[in-house]
Length: 143
Image 1: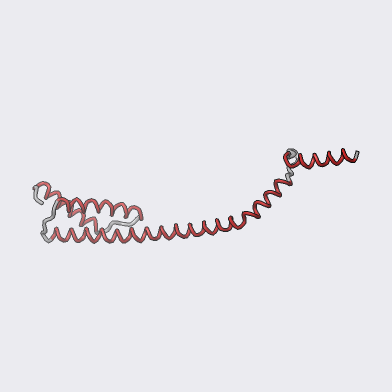
Image 2: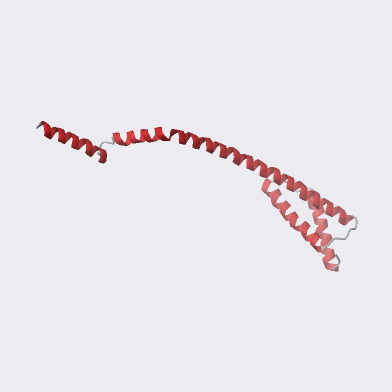
């Protein structure tokens, strides 16, 4: 009889590894394996958290760098448009390609201004002047 009880208890013990009683939400093996897994992976989880923090700070640094580059590009384009307008006002002749280049970079300038919500300001007047000179050159076919 004692042999049958030992076999029965052993059978229930082995069966409890594979079967979870659904009405009683108790799964000691699952909790044990979860504890062992989290203990084994604790260092990996900490390292991943460190990496996430580094990636976040690098991402913020890249955004700041992008903004700095864009602001420098805005200044460069403004200077080029102002210089071109001044040379037109001084009566210098320019090729059609030079005018088209100014029109192209002005589009880039407008995109950057819109991206950062900045105002255009004085550049609009000089750009309109350049477009007027360009239109006159096109009408007269003189470049």
